[in-house]
Length: 479
Image 1 (cartoon, rainbow, N blue to C red):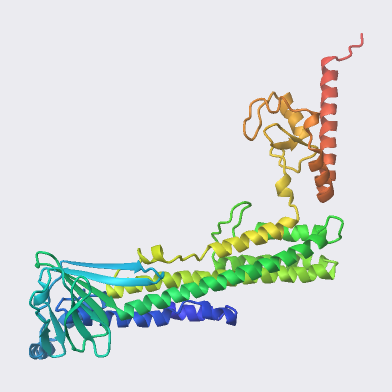
Image 2 (image 1 turned 90 degrees about the vertical axis):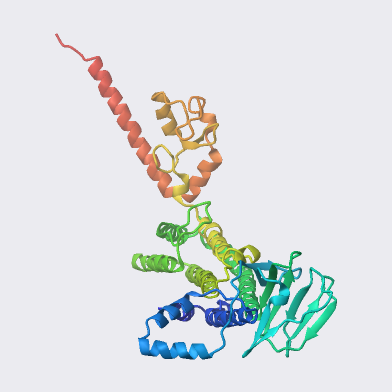
């Protein structure tokens, strides 16, 4: 499927009010054909051979394969038509500049080894020589500005008119500059169609960025309101707290946007994110978690959470299509016109199609999912279970007090995480983080109770083993 058709198909998935903010790929593609025609006309007027595009090369190759009778007739027709003694340029330089008003200006500069007085302009079936003016300064230039009809005016380096002629020419702007030795001429060509192409592309990009900025503000506002309401229903004193914790745990496990804590990057495409979120929502339905929400407000907030993720999928799809459209249309422009813009245009125009979605993803995880603490953020690095009686070493790493005691008995005196020397050896009961201990008891009461039972069993087993070992060492012998 062609890319233009792909855009039209994918656009149907977006909200109708979002569709005007898509890059109009087909319209820009039509402009490229006009650029090629105008470029060729301008070069022929200057009796300069235009660069051959890939499509023209294919046509020439097909022409060489015509049957001999057809080719001879075609050759006869060409013999009757006027021929151009094309001057092959020494150098063609295409650049895109930004003027003082911030507008993008594409320009073609051609250098040929021919004095300005010998250059000719082609007008339909005849060749028109440029006017010769007595006393012409060495640095004089000829500037052709678009008008109807077009007027070619000979001007000096100060812009004063020296001579003019009213000859209708193509709708483009051409300027010629001779060097001091009058053996080399620099020709400046500004194509109207090329200017229109970049004006439209920049307009599409600006409009897209304005929409994204407004949407960011509205999205963050919606997240803020949802966060405020979630903070109420996800309180550890509320009945829905455990259900919400399980919902957000499943959301994190689903890796909808391939997000990790503290990392805004995303490797998920819109399609991947959509598929993963659908899988997550189906899991919520099959496990019956939505039905376990007792507060009607919680059910409404869950639907709002779904909607925010769906909108994020649409925004990512919109940005991906615009990013691909810009890349492809610039590539097509360069291929068809032989005027390379792919390295210059991004340096003049900011094209950012990722930071918005990364920011919105971070907002979801930080302001919504992060409201409910997850047990994975409070695991002891040694036993890989929730920390019980959290003891904070002087290197700031937290472990179970029980695990630190075991490490000390095994003469592991350095921090198991960062290898801070003597951190375990210097630890004491005074280093227990009581505020963290109270927080864990409040938000993870079930896990803390289960950990206490496990530790109690562990202590009982150690005491039994110690007793058995002592009995074996001091066995009673009856005579």
